[in-house]
Amino acid sequence: MNYNIINLAIIFILSPKLLSAHESKLVIFENLINKEWKAEGKWGDGTIFKQETIFKFDLDNTIIIAKSKGFIDKKQTKYGSRNHGIRKFDAKTKTIKFWEFDIFGNLTEGTVIINGKNILYQYQYGDSMVTDMWEYVDDNTYNFKIGNYVDGIWKQIYLETQFRAEKIKKK
Image (cartoon, rainbow, N blue to C red; front, side, top):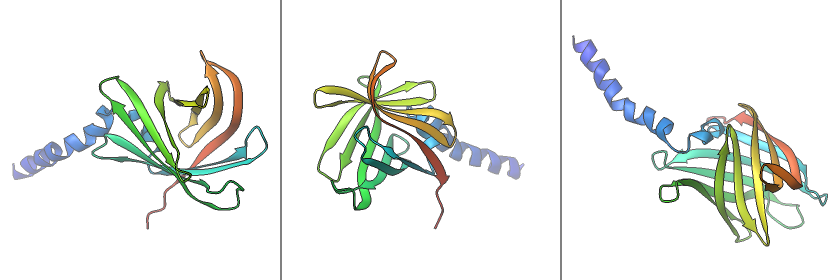
């Protein structure tokens, strides 16, 4: 009898924590969590793209924190912490918004669009509306594109590569 009461108490205590991620409007990001995502490629102008990103839930699963490494100088000779980002569901607009702060003092902000298992970031860059797409391939692979994406069609692609995941090694 005491055993059943203890089990029920444990379930009662743990249930809100287990449900909070699944009830979260950020559930699309669950596959990205606890993995280190790495990609390399070339921009349309021939410069090198190299990035490593780690995503984690924070503030009781109400936001996603993204920390990225990349080139931290214009000459692409130094590599280190380049971006810190936040993704959060906005209850007023019923959309996921994002903010990305980089080492150069810039802030990119926009909207996240979910299309099946694909994650699209749309934002204004100068005079252009730009889209970054994480196109789901499998649990450890996403095709990654940056360009002008209008009505489901890529009008121009600036970068096309692939992110692959590695489990984060616990220290």
